[in-house]
Amino acid sequence: MRVDLLSREYPPQVYGGAGVHVDHLSRQLRRLVDLRVHCFGGPRQETNVTGHRTPGELADANAALQAMGIAPAMAAATAGADVVHSHTWYANIAGHLAKLCHGTPHVVTAHSLEPLRPWKAEQLGGGYALSSWAERTATEAADVVIAVSRAMAQDLLRCLPGLDPDRVVVIHNGIDTDEFTPVGDTSRLARLGVRTDRPVVACVARLTRQKGLLHLLRAAPHLTPGTQLVMCVSAPDTPDLAEEFAVLAREVTGKGADVVLVEEPLSRDALRQLLSHADVFACPSVYEPMGIVNLEAMACGTPVVATAVGGIPEVVADEETGLLVPLVTDEEAFAKDLAARVDELLADPERARRMGREGRRRAEVRFSWAAAAARVHAVYQSLI
Image 1 (spheres, rainbow, N blue to C red):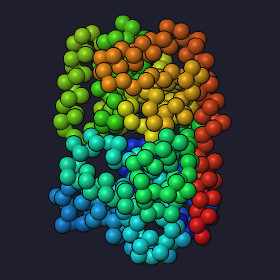
Image 2: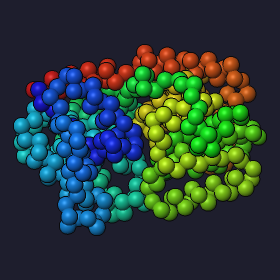
Image 3: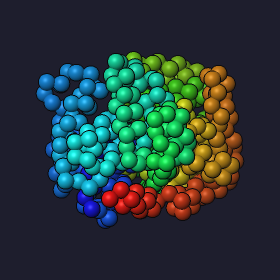
Image 4: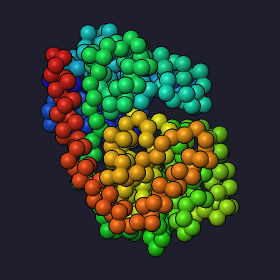
């Protein structure tokens, strides 16, 4: 069986959870099918991986138009595939074109939904209407839609009334617990400015409103004095958001909060070290269909304090592997709630360690990429 996987992100150009998903899922799928990968960007050295470039005449166009410009070439390259499988709206439209042109069954994995991310209009401008149209059109017409959580499945059916519920299946993201495992080394932390002689609260995320990073910054002054908040942020959606974040960071630091900002993507070694040696991992997302980074923290034995939104409660077991915080509209109240839940664990190290151990066990037992790939493979088989 030949399967063509379509994605904007693919190594080495991975910046978000969807890219991590595609990277790890593709490794497992290669053991099960004849896999071809089509992604955005320049040529790749890896066998059966094709990087598709933006057409020259669209070099200065809106980002959504650029994605639409790549779609025809990507769809054309799938000729001969038994199944096409697309990830995120950037590639969904290419999968839809392949279905129309070649009659190939199209599988969509829904990592998020544009209607639930209105802040994307800041990044895409008028392209947000185009991205929403592309996502809706391709998803409603897909043969199977894979939701990465039960909450994501509910969102799909609520936001896309044209989608047949019988074509939606839930397959959770996975985690490589050999790659993400507790490590003793701290050599890279000092280079990042992280001190391990005081409590460390870590957060790793893209700088987008979805991730709630401004909320966590507002929580910093309410943390127990002496707590170091390490925020690893990269890939800001817009220059305006980057400036807003920087201004708030200076403001809370001026109030005495100990905030360490890391504004470039972490190497895998540095990420493992940070997750292993943080006392608490914080995830303040306002929208999160699943949240792979929480699994990464759990696999490294770190308890998680996260908002109770989307698929997060399906990953972080409240009072077992971490603590969940209800999302409220009052920004100051939410900031205080976040800080209070983090402080609960900092004040009780044994409880935190127990949650960390249980998080590692939960990651090993319930979330493996091999199991996820086997379920995806079964979806493919049902279509041919």
